[in-house]
Image (cartoon, rainbow, N blue to C red; front, top):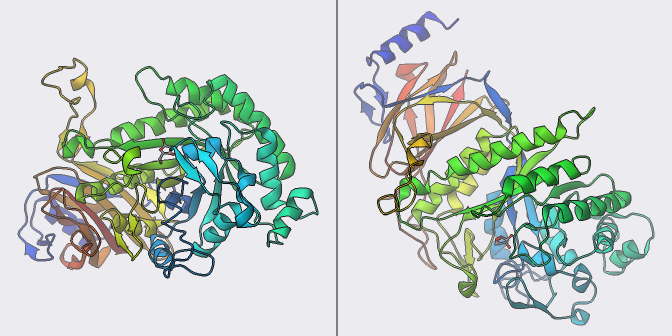
Amino acid sequence: MPSLHVRLTSALLAIGLVWTADATGRAQAPAAPDARIKIDLDRTIGEVDARLFGNFAEHLGRMIYGGIYEEGSPLADPDGFRKDVIDVVKPLGVSVLRWPGGNFASGYNWTDGIGPKDQRPARLELAWNDLESNRFGTDEFLRYAEKIGAEPYICLNLGLGTIDDARHWVEYTNEAKHTYWADQRRKNGRDAPYNVKLWGLGNEIDGPWQLGHKSAEEYALFALETAKAMRGVDNSIKLIASGSSNYGANADWIGWNRTVLQTLRNQIDYISLHTYIGNQDNNLERFLGRSQQIEHYIDVTAGLIRQAQSGQPNPRPITIAYDEWNVWYRAHNAEKLEEVYNFEDALAMGMFFNAFFRHADVVKMANLAQMVNVIAPIMTNKQGLFLQTTYFPLMEFAKQRGNTALNVWSSGPTYTLDPPNAAQNPNPNASRRPALPYLDVSSTYDAKNKVVFVNVLNRSKDRNIAARIEPQDLHVGPSVEVWEMNHPDLKATHTFGDDKKVRPTTRTVNVTASANGFAYTFPAHSLTILRMSVK
Ligand code: AHR
C-alpha cells in the first residue's frame, strides 16, 4: 500500500494540483495530461539482451575497405584498421559484429581470405557487382572484433557454398586439436582457437535476388544437414536460421518461417528477420508508425516458434535475431548504399529499439545494418570521419543492455495509418488497422542501480504531448535526467566538418514536488529518454 504522502500526491496530481517540470526544466502549472504512462516494476517482459546492440560489416562498397580497414593510411594502425573509426565505434557499445554479409555471403569462398595477403585471389563479386581483393578475411575480421570488444557472428554461404565449406570454417576458427584446418589457422598466426559462437545459416535465402536462392523446403533441408555437420565439429555453437526477408505481395514469408522452424527446431537457436524502412512519401507519422509492421513480424514469428515447439517433449529455446535493420531508401547500388541520414532517421532508431524492448522476451539479438559508410552512422573519407544523426540514439539506447524490459501501460492520443496514396487509391481496409499512439513508449529497469529508463518517441509532426509519468508504488527522484533529440528541421543532415547540428541535449528536471508521479511534456517529433532513480 503506498504511503499517505504518495497517495495524497497522486490524488493532487490526478486533479492537477501539483506543480511539475516541463521539457526545459522550468516549473509548469498543472494541466490535465494528454497521455499517461504507468511504470510498474512487477510487470516485466524479459532481459534486454546485450546482443540487441549488434552491428553488421559487409563486404559492400566502402564498409570494409576504406571504412574500417585502410592499409597504408596514416589513420590506420599496423594491422590496417582505422584507429579514428575504432575510437567512434567503441562508444556505440557494439556487442556483436555480423560479417561478411549480407548478400555478399552467398557467393563468398572463405578460403580465399586466409593466408599471406599477396597470395590471396582477387574475385569477381557478384552480389554487388564489384571486385573482391580478399585482403580482409577471417583472421582480419576476428582480430577486428576483438579490438572493438564485439562478439563475432559469421554468416555462412548457404547460397553457392557447400556443407564442407561450412564445417571446415568452424574447424578453422574453433578447433583446438591438430587438424588440417586448425593447423592452417596456426600457420596464419593464430594458435588459440577463436571460439566463434554465432553462425548464420545463410542470408536471405528466400529472396530471388540472392545467389543460390532456394525454396523453403530446399533451404531448410540444406540448412539442417549443414547444422548437423557444423555441430559435429563444435556443438557449443549457436545457429541462426535465415528467416524470411521477402515481404513482397507474392511472397509467403509466414510459410517460409514456418517450414524453416519446423525443420530446424532441434538445431537452431535463432531465426533471423530483416527490415529496412523509408520515408518515401515524406510522411513522418507513417514513417515512424512502421513499428506496427515490425511488431507484427515479431509477433507472428514468435507464434510460429511456439507452434514448432508445441508437442516437443523438451523444446529447444529459439528466439529472434533481427540481424538487419535500419532506414534505407535513398542510396542504392549506384551510390554504394552511402545513405545520408537526417534528423527524422535518428528518431526512427528510437522506434526500432522501442519495438525490440517491448519484445525483449523473444527478440534476443539485433544488428544495425551497417556500421561504416554503407547505410551507417559513421562516414569516412581519407582524411577523417563524421558522425551521422543516427549515431547518437544508437549510443544512448545501448546503455540499457542487461536491464529488465518493463511492460508499460500507456494511454493518449492516437492516429491511424492510411496506406500510401490513400486519396488516389482508397483502400477499404485502411480503417481496420489498429490505431497507433503518438507516444511510442518502452521502459527498462536497471535493478542493480535502481534506475528506470522511460524511452518516448513523440511521432506527431506538430503536437507537443503533455503526459503524466506514473510509477506504481515507487518513489522517484528527487530529479530526473533527460536525454532528448529534437531539431526544428526534420531533414537536417550532417557532413564532413559539420556534424554538430543534430545532437542530443541533456538536462536535469526537478520532480521533488510530485513524489510519486510527475508531468512531462514531450515535444513534437522528438525522442526522449528519462532516466530516473527509484526507491
Ligand atoms: O545491408 C544491405 C543488404 O540488405 C544485405 O546485403 C542484404 O542481406 C539485405 O538485403
